Length: 194
Image (cartoon, rainbow, N blue to C red; front, top):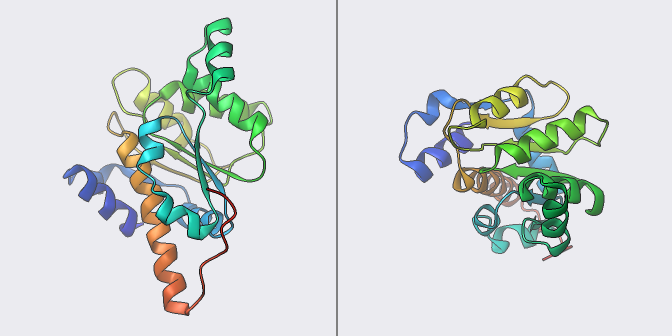
């Protein structure tokens, strides 16, 4: 946990992260296992996607996807009146094969939609990094996430968060995994996605 918190402090220059970052039991281990298995990481913004470099993900066989600007997502959001962020969550759950990690750093509506879909029986992702930022529903959506025991999660209590922090959390997990592999002398996993 400290490796992640330290990276979030470095990203924000905010020592309050020491008191605000929260982990469900086994969340770090779940994240490490998911990345080692070549999971798909779904972000709620292009900024979060860009914060997770392919030079870290490709050797692990992971891919990073943001569906926010997908034409079908845009059209569906315009038709239904839902936000693109929440519509992108629906699209990810419906169209992306295999195991998923969600890294949500900006849109409370994305986190709320994901939790709603889990309540409706959608398969649980390997990990939810829930760090939406702001004054409207950010703290509330994270409180709902932190009340769950059915899915591993990493979150930040209160209003603070952001795309950079969601990306930094994924990067911290990847760095931990790289160090673990180097210490065991293991070769990187083959590339399974870009």
